[in-house]
Image (tube, rainbow, N blue to C red; front, side, top):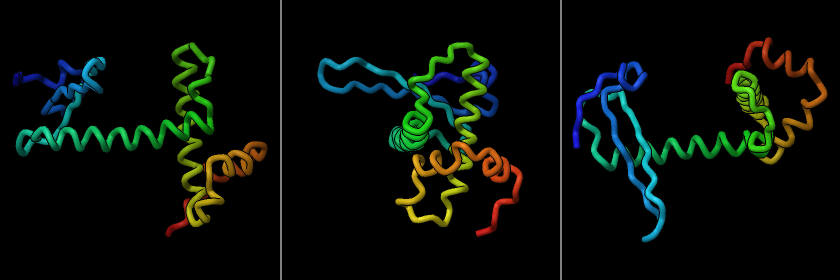
Length: 138
């Protein structure tokens, strides 16, 4: 079914296309629905392109979630107040970005999230310098 929808109805500025992806794993598996939006206006996206986009999104989600869960133990967080959880989530993501800057040029085996945490956990000044110093050009 195709329906014209305004971006305001979704709360998403620039949304031009919307798709629903239905997934069922196994014959008796629960049906999962995922809604996606796109701002691409050239032509309607075909089903295969929507699926490719969804798979790429999950690749990013899995890489990010793994770092947040393993390094920051995000799934074990007991913070329940919504604003506090949001702020803490922002700090975790900033930490991930700083870890990526720190890891540039290091051998992969020496640039793990655990190495980042161990090297920087008790050194506040190193963290402050990572934020305030210019990023070296590659």
